[in-house]
Length: 355
Image 1 (cartoon, rainbow, N blue to C red):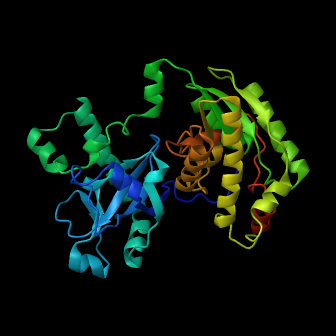
Image 2: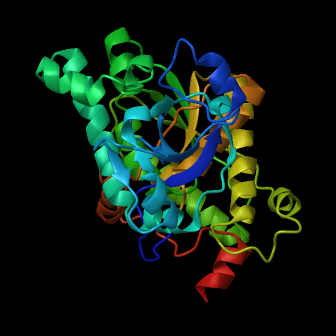
Image 3: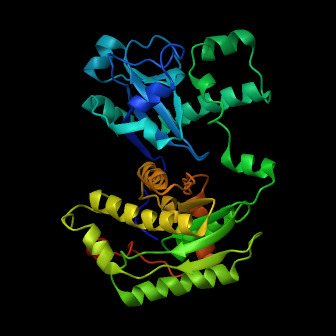
């Protein structure tokens, strides 16, 4: 587990929605899901802790208050541009996300600066809608019509179901193959997931450059599983230690900065191997502890997980384990169980940057 200075806990990216999304939700009848001149809106994609992506479109001519209005860009002065909460899409299907979108530089800078506020307001907008339709906290009819009359959320009721609550009501205890990068990162993930799944920890990390370091981390992983009490028994599988696979995967990216394209390739290598094993052994789901790290973007990780799941024909469990103080809890458990906590991810490149 990294012990560098913590950065944002809000993971986000800017993407376009794909043609497949608009084939699923054509206009008409989904008249609120506008498509601009045969191309989709650029969207701010935020990872939700409920297991879906919140997709907030960048729009112009926004005349209502249920949006984040840009203030400093030249476009905002002329065209009332902003992020429109009333046109949020809830995304669980990775094929609905197309490619990274290019947006106004000033508006991207303002998005970054205010990402906490934007994400908080978007989640509040969704939560208030969910509470209304569930009867938990019903709004006045006039207020609901004013705030949600033109909202796209009515098209995403199915996606708004919480994964864990659904599993609980079904009375099913599914199986989950959990890729783990190390014992500290796995600690709070196991604590949470073992309440709802039969978890098997899969330790596959060919990125670790030194065999002694690798063995030490494996031993800590096994010790934590043995000592930590869980509602359902947690099993363990050790993958092959094959650093040559890592070096082959990242060839040509050696000079990339930590957290960049080289890391994305490493994520895919480990998630693909996990998906293969999940398919082979018949697990209901697979996922990874990597999203516990404040230094790893869960949007990228989940997009990669969904991609390999579709290719392998298995199910990926969306996650952002750092949220709801998950990262903080992992530090607490690490101290409680006296877990070995390393100060770099394991590869020779991250170790180089730590010096």
